Length: 237
Image (cartoon, rainbow, N blue to C red):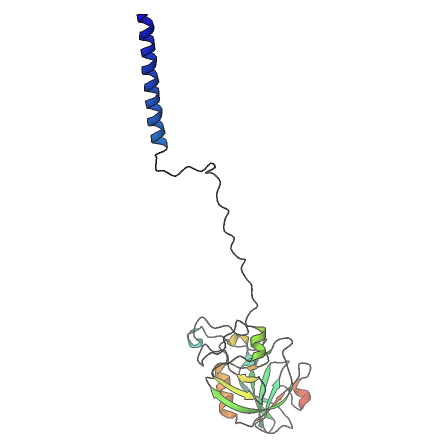
């Protein structure tokens, strides 16, 4: 009997010791105030999908990274440099003739001569032809893109103050009641190319020279893309 009672006492002590150890272990692993652990902590949230990059067409203008007078000088090809050339024509002195396919502007001097300037013209689908007059002149003009241009390129500014970064450049001569102008550019590298929305562009130095010679009312003849200046009564110099 004595041995049986002693065995039962030892069993009770062992059970109490095991219970105490289990409680302590559970307390250390899962405190009373701790949030329950997730069943599958190795599952990660799906990555956030960013919208794809939108590619938009190149704008009509490109604001320069530097002011034109701070950019390295661009050497124009000799044929685009302002020069007096032989140019017999029946048009009166003071007339402007735009030779669209050859990207030249002629300012008729008379006596079989003209001043020839290199120009940039309308890109494919935006060239035009006809006879207009200069109805207004402006120095360092503000730029207000016409509604037709905004419809094609809605990201354009609605207005831009005149200055070195303005795509109209140093001077502008407005043609009739059209949306077209003869103007300068802050991108002289585009002279000799078909890049605009129909306007005629010159370097800022050249447009300033032309501006000083032209009066309101000056006649402007714009030749079509498939016609050369020599067929209009002049010969290329």
